[in-house]
Image (cartoon, rainbow, N blue to C red; front, side, top):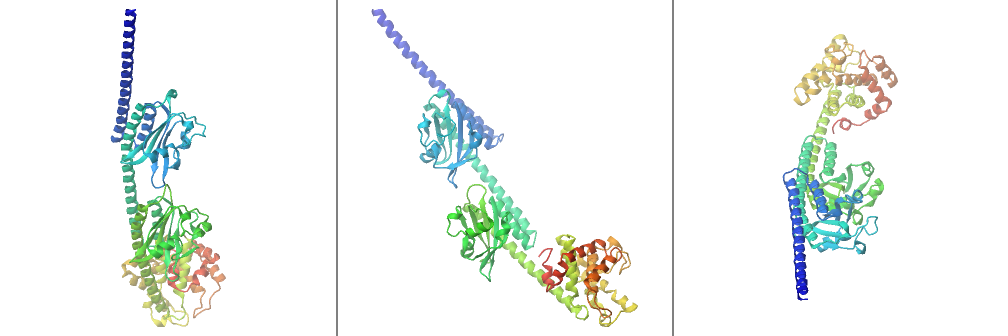
Amino acid sequence: MLKKSTSSKELDAAAKKLAAKDKEISRLKDSLRHREVEVGIYRELGNIIDGKLSISTVLTDMVKFALKALDTDSGTLYLVDKESKELIFEVVRGPGAKKLQGKRIPVSKGIAGMVVKRCKPYVSDDLKSEKAWLGRKGAYKGKNMIVAPIKEGTEVVAVLALINKEGGECFTKNDLKCLSSITQHLSIILERRGLFLELNKRLHQDKVLQEVGALLASTLDEKVVRTRAIEAITKLVNANVGSLLMVDDEKKELFFEVALGVKGEMVKELRLKVGEGIAGWVAKYAKPLVINDARSDKRFQSKMDKKSKFNTRNLVCVPVMLKGKVIGVLQAINKSEGNFNDEDASLLTLFSNQVAIALDNARLYSELREAFYATSESLAEAIEKRDPYTGGHTKRVLAFSLAIGIEMALDTEAIDDLKLAAILHDIGKIGIDDAILRKNGRLNDEEFKSMSDHPRIGADIIEYVPKLSRIVPGIYYHHERVDGKGYPKKLKKNKIPLMARIIAVADTYDAMTTTRPYRKSLSEKVAIKELRDCSGTQFDGEVVKAFIKAYKKGIIREYSSMNSIVELVGLGGSH
């Protein structure tokens, strides 16, 4: 009996020792598992530090690693979007992953939202009983879940949630310890990701600002400056569309100078009073605005959206200032992702300063051009006053030449050169004797020879102005014929510069349709027939075709009815 009792005690002691060893073995296994998790984490961190993998790939691999380390079948890494106050499904693994990837939910929703709020891990052994679990009504059968916050300092920036422990087992303290290690290292990766994204964002912004600065400096065309400005701001702040409204000082209104997007043209008909709407408020108070819920803002004017059938969600709006005065308003509308912020407003304000300078330079250049054309017009009119039979000739030749050039799709530079050459084509007549210019009858051979010298005189005058050297051929050769029977050089066909061939048709048509001392004017119909008949001999056939097309479209009459040369030079080319 004693022996049996002793044996029982020994067995009990042995059982206790065995249980203790099993417990120690289990502890060692858990510790080994934890160490394996740590080693795996450092391996993943090593990949990103060495630059072998992108951060997004490492995040995906870390989620896969967490699933394997904690023996779970699905999981999600949520990122916290502070601006929109949403949770983004950044990495999703398991059933239904494709449908969830990239989706957003309010930061207050679900178990993940609860973890963000409490800033503590959470374990649920019975998901069906969890009212906060958003997957309760779905097809996916979740049993249990372990969730941990990922922090930067004291702020939760992400959440890692793992679902369904293998075999239906419950999550343990060691699982929580492993998950804690994973989330701590994910915090490092996300911080690095944030730095990378911020750096890339800054580099992108700097690049765009440099590109825009170069673009704005490369042109003095106000229309081009304005369009490029709006294209750039949408790119700069990742907006879907943008617009530039200019201030009409006389009417105290804003009008759409540029509006991008397929609906842009529709809103150009609308105007806002200064002070009306969000843009009007910005124009009135000269302060930027960031509106992330446009329809709830009292200043928002829904008539714009109704007119264009556009849906304005959010916008950033800044004044365009010049010498302390608001001259316009820049708008970027509907952020591609998330909301606009004060940084976007600061960027646009910085950019608007460049736009203001570029617009002012373009305006000054435009005024200078107008002054130059007005001076050229005055000079041409002074020459015409010496010949009572050619009043308005310069304006009409310019109108016809411009109509031909546009019909022939000449580029901007060629159109600008053609304008000047047409205005000054007869400047050489300043050197012709009044007796010849004012003769009431046909010129004799000697007089004609003297008159035929006006292209050379004109070319000699213009050659003294280096900036006008490109238009000399138009002045010098506008009396040449394609058959080689013209003057002064008897050039043939394409040896005659195109602008001279164009002016030749325009000049001759005007001569035929105006009364001269030696004959009455011809009708337009007869003059057109004359051009056709002389096509290929006196005139370039393609130029004649372009003139006739413009005539049939009514452009010849439209342009020739304009009041001044300055008005005409605003058509085509740069202005």
